[in-house]
Length: 282
Image (cartoon, rainbow, N blue to C red):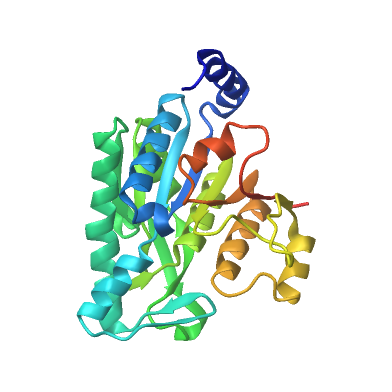
C-alpha cells in the first residue's frame, strides 16, 4: 500500500513542472501499443485529461499503422514500406483515410471526452488544416509533405479549451488526399505552433546506443553519428528526423518515449529524470 506521505511528496515534486508548463503547448504523437492495448489507451487519455486540467494546451496527432495494416489485409491490398514510410497507392489511400479520419480519430476523441477532456477530432483536410505536396515526386505514392499548417484554426480550438485530435491526412490545391507520416506531421504542427514540447510515443524505450542502453539526451551531431553507424535505422529514422526538425524550428525540446509504460507522459514531463530520450538542438 502506498504511503500517503510518499504520495504527497510525488505531487509536491511535480508542482514546479505544472507551474512551468501552464498555458504552454504540447504536441503529442500517439501511436504504437499505446493505441492498441486497452489498458494503455485508458492510461493515455487520463494523462491527457490531467494535462489539460492543470492548464497545458494539448494537441494530439495520431497514427494508426497496425489498424491500417489489418484493413489492407482484409481487402487484399498490398502495402510495403520504404525508408520507414508506407508506400500508398490509389487503393491504399482510400483505406488509409477511412481508418485514420474515421475509425481511429473518432475513437480517440470519444475516449478523451469520456474521461473528462474536452476534445474535438479533425482531419488535416478540415478547414485546410494541413496543406501538402506529393513527397519526392511520387516515390512513395500518395504520401505527402506538409507545406503549411493552419495555426489559426488550431490556436482557436486551444483558446476555446479544446484538444484538437488530428488525423494525418492532408490535401493539395487540387484537393488530392495525401497520407502523412504521423511523426513528421506532429513535427510540422509543433514547429508551426512553436510548441513547448513535442512528444513521440513509441514501442521502444527511446533512442538506444550501440550497447542497447537508453540515451537520455541527444543533439544533432550525436544523432548524425548514430545514423552513420547504423545504430539509428529503419522506422526510427523518420521519428528521429521529425524530432530533430522540430527543435531546429522553434520547439524547445522533443521527446521519444516508451508508450508501453503506463502513464509515460506524466513520468517524462513531471519527474526530474524522465523515462525517455530528449532531443535538443545543441
